[in-house]
Image (cartoon, rainbow, N blue to C red):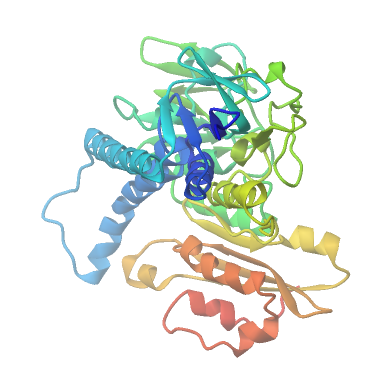
Amino acid sequence: MATEFDYDLFVIGAGSGGVRAARMAASKGKKVAVAEDRYLGGTCVNVGCVPKKLFVYASQFSELFHASKGFGWSLTEQPSFDWPSLRDNKTREIERLNGIYNNLIENSGADLFDGRATVAGPHRVTVNGTTYSAKTILVATGGWPYIPEFPGSEHALSSNEMFSLEQLPKTAVVVGGGYIAVEFAGILNGLGVETHLVYRGPNLLKSFDREMSDKVTEGMAAKGVNIHLNTEINEIIKTDKGLSVVLQDMSLIDSGLVLYATGRQANTANLGLQNTAVVLRDNGSIVVDDNFCSAEPCIYALGDVIDRVQLTPVAIQEAMVLVDHLYGDNSATIDYSDIPTAVFCQPELGTVGLSEEQARAEFTDIAVFTSDFKPMLQTLGGGADRITMKLVVDTQTDRVVGCHMVGEHAAEIIQGLGIALKAGATKAHFDATVGIHPSAAEEFVTMRTQVR
């Protein structure tokens, strides 16, 4: 019997969430289409987490070269950095990943359309001039960098352009206080660029534990990033030598580049959603229910475009829950609490659970344990880096409700502790665990003295 629709599922956007949903649905025998007008793999693979982490690695070598002397290594000549080599090697790796995503979609049996898809109405999607019918439409178009309009704003770059610069400037200004801003400030500084970080608020990484974000700020400043808080840019003026950045107090910073990392907005403009009952928030994100269904019963959305938790692994898990809801037994769920996350700033920040501030608001009595020390690499390496760790405990249940770390390998260490928090581990469990010596991670199981 012929199906009523061309497709059971039409996915708009081939990022991590969209591709996972398409593959899972196709594996269940559904007829699936995926449309992508930019690049396979979405923001994360192309202009987000993956190339950014490669750049972070690149920017750390200068400190490692310096540290190696204390361990007996001598470099016969001063190391030099070649930006085009890094940029082009990164591009080759991203193209390899694009190919993998292409193969994943094709091998799943889904149809892949190279073109911009728009919603023509309920159950209808237009791509490359042809309109297709679909029982279910999934919008997984992600987010897009937002740059506010002000005098000279056309001279500012977004994070998208940072991965393909023709050349590195001698001086750069990064605007913003969130994770993208602090990560790029660390990358540029580590690659030898005189870096200024400008933020209108009093604290960087304001959504994280305050003590930890303060440690990040101190560490960045110690590494040479010029941090300007409580100020904004009035104007960017193009000059013969580059750009002149005018701050609120009318002071000037001459710069070769201005990066605005002041937030991302849902990528829903010109998508045709006005042809449906889909409801958008003021920031363009799509309102969905617990099953990721919009106000239009046949249209679903997930990932950054719904603006819940903008993390790649979250979008992937949302996709698995959605496919189970549509084509499985509807038993899969997603829990947005205790999601481990990392900011690949320098020093690195890893965290899971509640900040101290959140815990104080939620529980009547908490205990805070901290440890601050110089990592072993620096004892002979001669660097100024430190590691700070923190546990937040609900004293009534002894459950560890927050776990935070600033310093080398924070992301790798916090991932394991994320399992412990998800399992409901208590401080007694941490105390009963034997540490791995010598390691930084062992500090998490040897903290015995309550500081607050």
